[in-house]
Amino acid sequence: MNKTTLVIMAAGLGSRFGGIKQLEPVGPNGEIIMDYSIYDAIEAGFEKVVFIIRKDIEKDFKEIIGDRISKKIETAYVIQDVTNLPDGFSVPEGRTKPWGTGHAILSCKGTVDGPFVVVNADDYYGKEAFVKVNQYLQNPDACDKKYNFCMAGFRLGNTLSENGTVTRGICDVDENQMLIDVNETFEIERDGQTDFAKATRDGADLRIPLQQPASMNMWGFTADFIQELEDRFAAFLKGIAGNELKAEYLLPSIVDDLIKEGSAQVKVLDTKDKWFGVTYQEDKYTVKDSLKKLVDAGVYPAKLFEA
Image 1 (cartoon, rainbow, N blue to C red):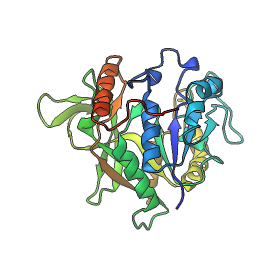
Image 2: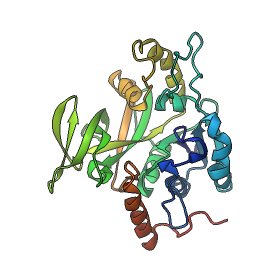
Image 3: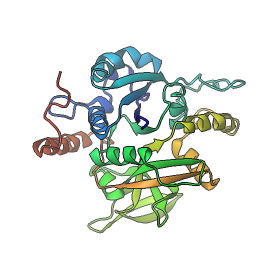
């Protein structure tokens, strides 16, 4: 059995993490959201964690997070650098923005050599999602495609904020729960007391069932996907004329291309867990209260990682 690696995209954290919402203490003993993802991954059978960070935060990151986590699970670091480009390309003048989530995972080449799961540093996903994606990667469905991936499909109603609208990738699936496509959808909020949310997409108003699967960027991939990311990156760079400073190489777009080309299937794994995140400053109080309830119910120990 190949060991599963947890890949945490943390390159967006600021230097020394000053005032950064992802590092806001939310647990009863000062735990941050990332601690809960790592704890749940270890319980689910993951054996390695890889942090994607920037060079300028490497020292602080190891001191604040990485060194203590490395005592619990095999730990590695990769650097997402805007200058890490294919031969013949250079960083456009004025570009400081990272190249996106696809480029972040491409940074893992040489460090990740087995099945892996991608998560954001600032999202709480819940225990069920980690168990399901690991089980799928270890025992995938029969597939006649080149790539056989999976994705945690959160129910839209479990991903909304009480403090404002959110943006989500709304998923269309077939009768076998295979992903058809992911549509970036904006200004999503509950539609009163109904079983729907209201939102906008491409300038049009929508009503979306609260049970509709939504992507929270939790993907399960096989190691060969990293080579695919490298093979496609040059074509992406050639196609960004006019948007050189803001264009991003994004995982949902790349996966969508592979599906439409007939090269990949993606199983959407239903999870009933409630997503937590700090989209708005007020959200941190909801997150703290929700985690306290989980601790009080015995889902988590009061102190996640004993010395």
